[in-house]
Length: 327
Image (cartoon, rainbow, N blue to C red; front, side):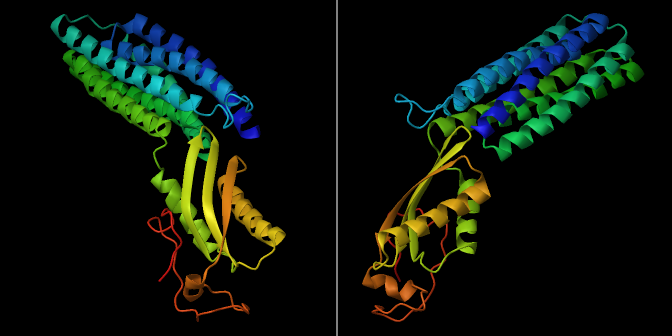
């Protein structure tokens, strides 16, 4: 539960920070009446809502397994990310609406220099917090933290873009730039929301994480033991920060039960060393058959029926198949 607690504590700080930045941005909007700064403030409202939704989802995800949820509560993170992505998408649409409205009915801008200083501070804070949050989300396999981190990073980048537009207004005295900048970054925000919703739906539907599987296959090949004759039917499902992995491991048929168990334990420890302690493994051990001899590298086998011919390197294609490998 250590990982889940870390994620929850990080999200608490993100939620508190989002409230403070929201206040600063609305002060900047009150001073300037800039629709671009209003754009930033509206996105921060979404940050606050999403921050507390993410906090609640991580609280749920950190709850221990029970009879009704034997795999834990990690799926709550995917629902949280889906809601957050939808809110981000909606904020982008609202930003574009306000920008177009401001083009038709312009509002005079005041104290632009003070507004720029205030939103610049929020941009720096968002980028730092977003980077740290996103990094921890990747490390702990937390989609909720990854979504929060991406949201904060996109907020910081869009704020700097808005600042660039406001500086142009200072030098050119053309107020329409304010709305043009808001439309551009509103579109970027909509795309960010779409990507978060897409990844959350993939998690809810248990879509295979190709990058994770590639890394896992590489680790298994690099650390392959002599008694691991074959490995197939590999599947990995994410439940929040917890990875559930199951596979079939072929070992020599004459190994005793405790010896086969030792091989499975070695496989489990390897995966946990590489992907963190929040991993659950369900490994089915298969006895080798005569057609396994040509691909078996075991040197001291006294019951070998065929000579070794060629090692089969595990790949993303053959390790996912539900059948034992053969030449």
